[in-house]
Image (cartoon, rainbow over all chains, first blue to last red; front, side, top):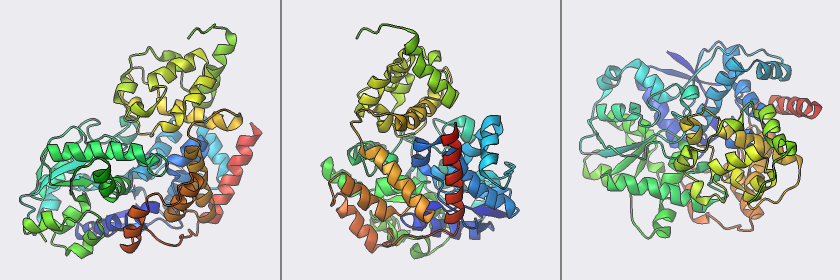
Length: 289
Length: 186
């Protein structure tokens, strides 16, 4: 299976471990990722705060490249990119006026034929059985809180994936790997990432709520599906502990890193050494590392 | 507060509908947006109050509160609105309109971040995370903020010291120029 791959700005720097683990896992599952040629930033939260047309044009520019190269499926692992891409496709489908404007901006006429996926959607579409076949080492003893983040399922009209308030896709994959997943109510709360540089106080509060809930529900690890959630929950965890005078020490892993470990990867191959809150204690005590 | 209602008050809702296609008059104040909003605690004007203010045409009050910049764009309000109003789209419309006139903004750093972000995208085709953090910290007069987080990230190679340039940047600039021309023309 061949997919166009849109890594986005984060996966080439702060989320490089996500990129590594995703590559490892897709290779193991026989999925071929081909990076979109000459891709540019999706605009994230900044484009749609300045110009609606621009916020649609940036994804269309990338989708056109994929379409021209003959792809009809595209993987966007970062939620900010994913939601911008999906929104562009849906809005072009429903808004003739917008479509006209987009055609005025581009020489190439994007036909809207590239479907956009998150890796979770791709893995579930392949079937849990395929994943089960690849497991070499069961992740027994790990209690995982699956954190989906804000825009993986929201708004449902655009995302068309999983249950909007209580998603299960990541849970079912993590359970297949042999780990236990916990029930908790903060699966789709926002970590506050668009404010991470300007109102860090809000990010610390929102991320603290997420970490506290996961800890109270009994998790010893959190899995995420977005490099921005990861940067907040992992990168800022020490600041959160200092601000709220508490201690979490919860490792924040990408779900692809857990899959890689279960598939028998060396920790280094899936970028475990890049995590700020070391999972060595948790994974080591369970004999997983 | 007493609001004397006149035809002029309808201007804001009309403008918003023209830009966003959303009708603020559909809101009947059930407050589901505010109850689900993760950043409502930090807003001087809560999302449902913003909707009411938009119905009444209180543009100045909306901008003074700074609520449109505190919104995290997490899409919870859109998902839960029983009237199916795209509240984030309305907030984005207000953000777009804010460029056109002067008003007091209690949180000037947030739109400044968006401008710096887009300037990097325009220049390199990609975001330069370290540069973005440095520039916005200078802008906020807190140059050493988050240095405790950035230095280990640099050591682990999670932050790249230099920007990457996309080969698509040139094409991107052409697209941006055309959009500016199109938006200026209307």
